[in-house]
Length: 486
Image (cartoon, rainbow, N blue to C red):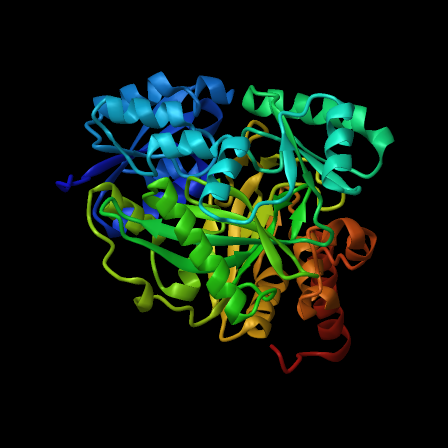
């Protein structure tokens, strides 16, 4: 396959993902074109790019989801490629096909694979064909009777999980604990699916009690070479959405790690996959059996922890693969040598999870050994109410899990300061300090089960704290004269 050189790329995203991609592009001497909506005209990704083009007004369909405008800008600015980041159009097969049809390079997996994996029902069938274990379930359910009949035939007991067949990200997922809840649960899941994905097709699956969410990062080139970059633990979630990830997983031993990672590679080969991708599994801690969940056909938010433990730049490799290059290593060349943790700093009230938007009046970013930060904002930046609430990713690394937790504690308690908007940082600090998290005793229901306890542990700094500290210094000097610290 002939190689195509990428000299200039349009980054079809905003905020944290756009900034992350642009930083690698600088290293690779690839010029970048940013797109921005009206409220994002002073956003960080706009300043960082080599060029920036206004794409439309605030609503995503007028700006970051406007395929026609994005492709037109890419061609007008002489870009060879488009990188979608994560979110927005990253897993839109129609957009990927249009990009390639217009003669541009799509920095991502094949459009036909994106389409296949975007449908949970078809994805599950392909996984079964590749001999990948899947959760017992039933497709195309429409009524409570459909579900009750399946439960009786397959001897499945409550709780169960109703899911949208299209999409992911925790949308269109409802847990059901009794027959009485079924009508409302079906209606809620279908409504969420229709709004989020334009498709209200549903499936139902057995609910794995106290399940652990394990995902495997894979890389594949266009020459048939496929490798895994080991696994990540993504069990700490809120409303089925991840807020903390780590690698390697503390839930599995080396034998299970080998099995789950090579199962992911086998599925990637079955799909004819190339580029970066993530294959997600649910682990039953009682039986140590794992089940296929879905394939994320894009760069994952949490890819940074895998980069920290392997020393690889996944975004850089995505560009190399898109150009037609072979992977520069084999599976035997890759091994983790550290433990890493990532937390998502969302602009939300940590008690209610309501969005918090406005101007960031003060911003201090964690620094020091073992810390990596991917920020989409700066001091004085506006956090608009129209888009995802993620403003920053904070990562820590250490020789082992204990050290990575200790570094993250320093980052959140001593290094991070955000004023002007609320963030979930106090919740994240409570989580990493909780004895059950430290011991590795948690499930996807951890926040739900420990919520009151976590909130009670909040220690939020305010401007009053600084005023009191200054007043204390002044009182000491006034009463006792010059102090040693002066």
